Image (cartoon, rainbow, N blue to C red):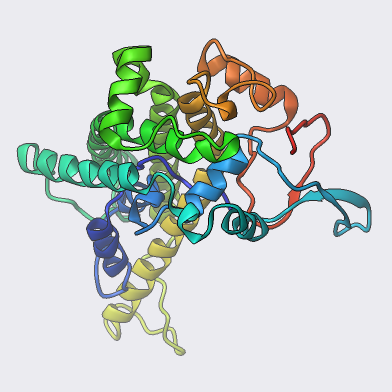
Length: 339
């Protein structure tokens, strides 16, 4: 399962509200699931899972692959799992090593939360209406487009404001690869980046992250809308006898809402997996050619742009590198810098 990360913009309070709205008795928002899935990492209280995943993303493989068999019985090479890698980090740095980059990540999440809350006060959303298959296509689609546009605006603004702290967090984490200490505190890191790279240094990797967010929001919301509005029947009943509207209307309403809430959740997972390459490219660009070993050969070429990075990963078959937690196969044509 691919994780949506990035300073990534969903907030714990909003997530809790969305979960509560998934209860059949409540009417959920059509676009809520997408905004919650974007930035799932922002809801976690610690950075240890994302630290391990980021190290895997940059291609740092200190342990050799092992020979195993796939479901077809063929011999394949498997890289150590996420949990094996976490144990290795503890052996090298102790448990405290799992929390590299935690301070800037928490600050990034807090800034994102404050930004979204402030924007909601300045630009309050319109009344959210439940979309059903009783709406005509133009009317219901117009609702989804309007709501998704609003979520996209908040997502992009909060992403841009929080991205500098995300860059600092990424660089603090990947120092594990070369055992460096160039980026330590937030303030000192800000000074180093500004001195060496200028203002643009705080926004490296921003474009692929923004594109990933936009594609995810629209893809998730539109897919969920078409499935919920045109495939989920409001008249279906969840009672054994199949009671009609007059006999048990509340039961029918609850079942339709429950199905819609599950649909949104599944669509969020599916679309997040498809947009994972944007996140990978964005994170790699954030640490590329910044003076750290993880962003230089042999771990990574010096990329001219995020498009160059995308093409390189595509040729290597590594666009989904770091997305798997357990069965990490060594793809053909891939090359890793191993200690």
